[in-house]
Image (spheres, rainbow, N blue to C red):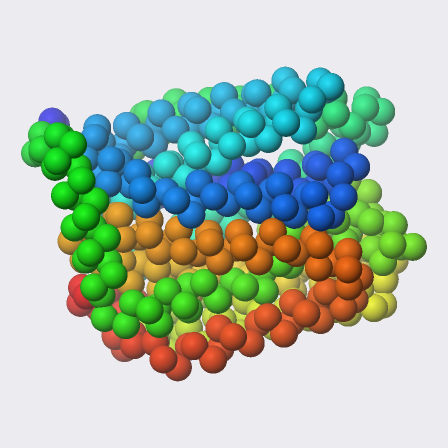
Length: 430
């Protein structure tokens, strides 16, 4: 195989935009869409939280991504399947069994996106040197979050505009998903051209027998669960986003619900505007600052402040639930504060996952880490809608703040090399 070089700036931003977009569609935009299609909060949280399952169980097939074909091949093929899933959702939304049919295509997107994550994260670690990984972690996180805010913001603005223009909510969302499908076809062609060929031919001729694959899976799991202080690390991964897992399922319903139901009564377009303007700017600023901060002081010293930044801004939803402001300026300011904090805090989490994944099987180990992260989002999220309908928005957001505490209790038990991430120099492998 002939090796090729591409500047990381040519493919890292677009690759992580492509990784983040289907995730936000499955996890967040689906919530808002089903709310507009008049499902209850309990149904929305339960059905969409189940869609986390592919990210939870993806370690079961992550060794296949290491062994069969190349990660580059997996990336471009999965992007094509994701585009097909989006087109399928657009086609089914106006049918009589729209819920069952659209959920089926969401499952296709979810499995394809989870597989894409395995390949993309492995490609990132193969295609960049250690110091480049630390340098680009803020960039990749920023573009991942830009994709998420583009989905929650610009895409929702488009859907809201189409709702007004067509007067037909299912048709408006169907057109939106057709446009998304076209975007992913373009990403497919772009990455076929821009991704470098970094994997050696020898990696493609390893033992592909069932016995060889099973041994690879066994070695991967055994080496992961043999890491020092693995139990503490996994508990931390599960708890880092405990509050966010519940908050994320109810932010859009809260903003959309009528004031009489405890919400803010915004339109679809207004919700998209809040996330797609000040939200995206705040997120970019938070992500870039966090990368600079981690490279200056190292992950060990930065992680507390990043965890605090992730969780403390959730207080803005407590305020909005009690005050129910009708000023879009105030609502946008609250979204800005929460998104900037999230952009700063999520970078620390990504860097910790990279740190804990270091070693011979770092691609598969990173997939295991993100699987536990997804489990930490899936289980609390499934109950979030039921809790909110039982408590009301005010008590629910107070409960979310209580759920920020456990991660801080685990943090002092972590052992992180003090030089990891500092001055673009990574620490030793585990």
